[in-house]
Length: 433
Image (tube, rainbow, N blue to C red; front, side, top):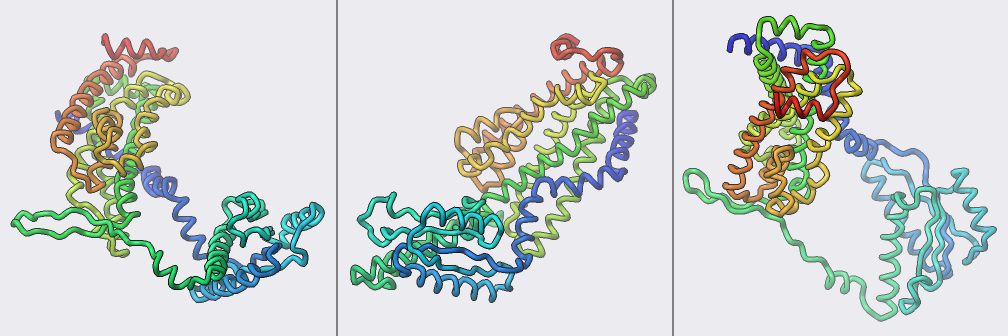
């Protein structure tokens, strides 16, 4: 055991004592969540200039007048909020109808960025009995589907047309708005009982928090598995190709070498979790989100994290010992990565239905069980205890079998030289030894 711990300390130092580890720790969250961070940052960046939109109003200027009032209100609100958003400017086209030549002229103005877009409002828009095709408003722009101006225009036109239709029926828009006000249904958790027997009231669950807190735990586990498994692969390939493994095997057995590497890797993954936990705690404390973190999940998270690192680390070690080139390892690891990432494709459905068929069956499939069970437990759902224990027991058995089979491959592959074995031969090593 002393030799195993010596190897584990060496692997731990090799993993966390490098600049690559610190860079990976920093870059991994940016790669996962960088798009969200940049999008939020860009919303705060002041946008200079104005966005000019040409309006072709087939209603004789009625809706254009309403849009002018709406855009004035929008620009005033944007200025009060700090002026980060660009100013909208409307330009009325002199004719209520467009010919193809006019559309071409306006399109050229959009291409030269003299206009942001141009809009055709049909005369039939104020006629509720007209066919839907005749009431269709057309918005022309290079990025029409994603343009925020189109979404604003859609809302402004909806309010203006609704107000005019109600006025035509002699109905007060304010009365109708109050009568049709939506009913708010507040999302709450369940009542709980403390260890002292005191009843703890239900807490309000925000929609985004109920979705992204479980996803955050899942992504943290996925990042740590990704961060810890790759160095194992690269390290054992380097030791094999440089004949370092042969020297090490003169002092320890292949299983001791493999076990020491796995233990050092687990310690490294726990260090990564500790670093992320400190950062997340500081951020949550600064934002006042500490009550959103399910602290009772932490022990289960660590258990499933350790087992997941052990299972996939053993597989990566076996693959690294069997091949000599990174390209060959990538082809063998592709299906393994797909199995690891499998819960990422269905995480939203699992959060919505934590006790649904997908979540339950995913809990009993060893490659996906760590991530799926973390999702289910973090979603504040009442996971049946037998499912939790059965999933854990099945995962432990699968990990033990996986480590045993990976040890067979590691024992033969670490000394294998020459042409890399085929997949069928690697499977024969695992099954027959």
